[in-house]
Length: 104
Image (tube, rainbow, N blue to C red; front, side, top):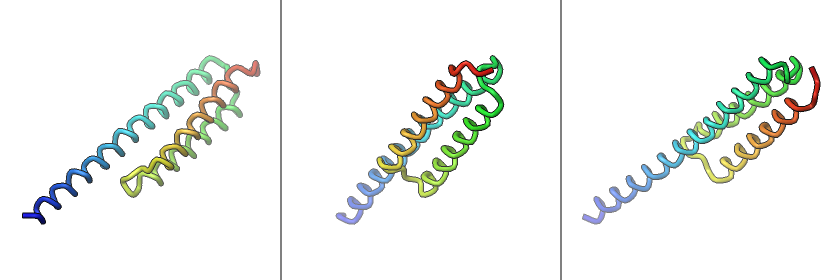
C-alpha cells in the first residue's frame, strides 16, 4: 500500500514539474515571437539597416539555441529561466535602441 502511495505522489510531482516547464517554454516563446515581429516591422519601416537587422537576428538565433539546449532535458531550472529571460531583455533593449538610433 505504501509503495502505491509513493508511486502516485512521485507521478503527481513529476507531472507538476513537466507542466511548469511547458508553461515557461510557452511564455519564453511568446517573447521571442514578439521580438521577431518588432524586428520585421523595423525592417519594413526602414528603421533598421541591413547590418542592424542581421545583428538582431543573430542575437535571436543565439537565444533560440540556448532555449533548445536548456529544454533538451525537459526541465528548465530557475537559473536557466533567468538566463533566458535576461538575454531576451537585452535583445529587447537592443531592438529598441537600434530602431531609434536615426540611421537609415
